[in-house]
Length: 474
Image (cartoon, rainbow, N blue to C red; front, side, top):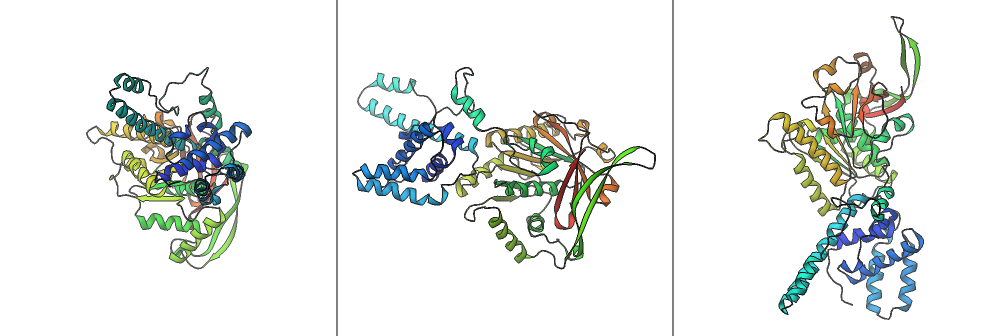
């Protein structure tokens, strides 16, 4: 059996998902025709996965080896057996369930199989025309159908079993998972296909919050694309991430005895005017840190993170793109993500763009307000087409300087951005709270979940170490 050179990167990813991921296999089983794969050994493995799912309603995982050995005992073509064996051996370290962006990979599978069908149609039509079979060529053209992934296709709601399968095989589970009260407050909004705006005044901690979101996503073994588009240089954002990973301050003057918050409790109290208030009581521990971050500490911390959270060393989990102010727009970010996908096989679950207001316009010919609207429409499209959680900070208006807790009216530039997001997370902080490094988060808007904009999640920050310690919600 001759080994056939194929688009092995894509087909390999499809087969790994068929072998390891029940959700992907369940949805793919309604659309995939194994004969459309280029290599015969890949067709064989795909058929095994489909049959296994029909019988057991599970992905085969390591049981694919048992299926192979049963087949190999009956197969007389030793070259064919060798090719399948070599391919499965190359996947032996990847049989455990994979954390993959299933909806995005299904879209890729549909596009790939459609392109293969088009290539086959082209060959068939050419052969018919060469033999003077015009009517057969026309029949082949008119009977052609693309592979339906559900995206942009009509759905027969009452009869389409595949559509209902897609709906419930990928429920809206949070991609970024916070523990405790923070999880109850934040997790419902941090789901795939969502666009979350982080709204706050200048220097309120939007980048700080973005880094914390990225770290929490990595802890959940999700892939993160982080675009720093103008506020910070490459070295500045790298140092901030390094401080968060290593637990060391950025600068020497922040060293010494560092007060690290460990617990926060919300207690009822009476203020000076006799009004009932809720007051956070914070318990700190003192840690002596004598040295700021350096190259060795950051690299050591990064390696430790990979080991501690089971992240692979041979493929990226956090990709960073740094661009000067107003030099890149959402369409160009989409192109960068395409390049990372093809060159690095990197498909993000979370896309963070810090921050939306300093992106280049999608169409510079339009007036400023329509440029803002176009940017947020493009961000929403990015979340839907990439099937990712997109997080994009944005500035609040001037009135937000004086309000205790932000509301819907505290948008800046164009109110239509409120219509495009699935959630707006407000950053709120009084001068007194700033002294104690306390931040209050509130949902200014949130689709598909109940929320009260007056209800806040109290967070204690340790700015020296670039960390946020979450606590109770009120």
